[in-house]
Image 1 (cartoon, rainbow, N blue to C red):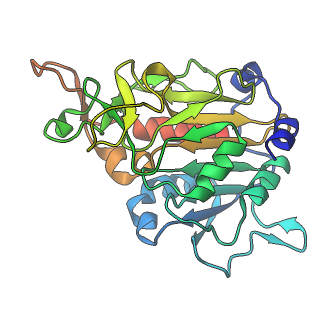
Image 2 (cartoon, helix red, strand yellow; image 1 turned 90 degrees about the vertical axis):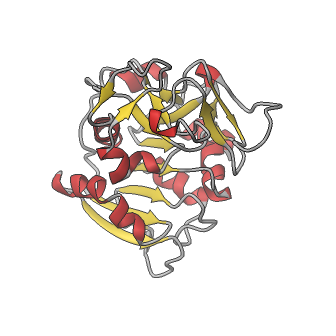
Length: 281
């Protein structure tokens, strides 16, 4: 399957960077698959902003078998959002169907976390994205938010944004991130990082002593993107919280021993998410 995807989704990084950031001509119908109904409330700002831009969002629980993703050979939606990190089954959709959806020129946003399911892992693997093991977190004992001082330093204040002016304009504050790490194929022309860890970041079980590392430093990817020759686009985020109301509205300050690091009244999450969503859709 991976070989076929390489044939289907073959785009150089330079094409992704210089493509125009505009709404997909495919349409405005969005299916949002949620782990549970609470996510519609905890991530309501994100969904409200999509609707304000003219998108029609239908919501479905991951185990909802009444949702018709495809009917009589026709796709019922133009865009797919999967906010169901732990679901082993997503409204009866297979990983192969998600790839067919992309092959048809449609777009996908997938958010994982440390309870990542095999379904998300399979879709990501076919796109040459490898998430770390279930139960692991991205950890950084230097670039973490000061509110996590007494914690395990898994709440990152991340600001290593990709140099992609067609996707990003100014993002005025670090992004709060708590979740699982990605490792992407370095020589792949299919995908590229949007947000990476700092040189001091690493991925591991937060409660275990550090031994072998899946990925660390600037190779550690927090959010990645893929663009196909047919202009279909896919976003993989290692954090579902990144899209949440709480992270959108929270202040952010990188920890420093003297307490003099710059504090921002609002994180860069809302700016970051709005810009990558505009590009993806």
